[in-house]
Length: 151
Image 1 (tube, rainbow, N blue to C red):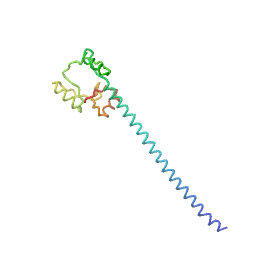
Image 2: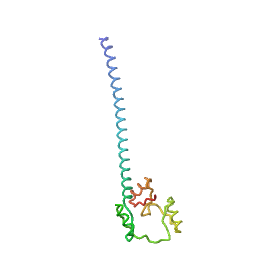
Image 3: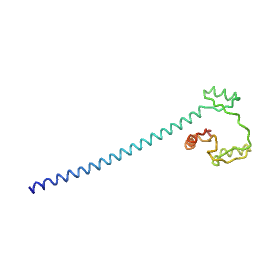
Image 4: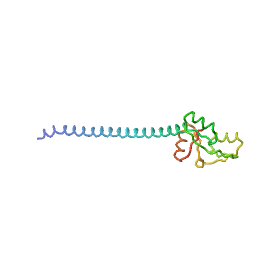
């Protein structure tokens, strides 16, 4: 009886070790699966953000802003097959609202001899963004602001 018990012990130990190894393998496979799912979700989210930015840029590129009385602008837009956005005649003002980081706005105000009123980005109706400035475009979208492409 004692000999039979001694023969059965290695079989039980071997089975237990195999079970522990299988659990470790299963845990690694599960970890890889979770990591892969997270990467795919992040990639899809990045693709959707990129698509939204591209859509906004395309819409901006396909639309021409014209004053209602500017027949030359209206005709040029029609000839190019672009949509027209009618804007009001800009009111002449001796001051310009600029965000402190918008150097193009500051330079333009100086060139036109205007006073500069420094404001927060949230106080502007229209944000000036570079076509390549994804962060600015995202902020404008999040705040529901119009975008003026600065380059």
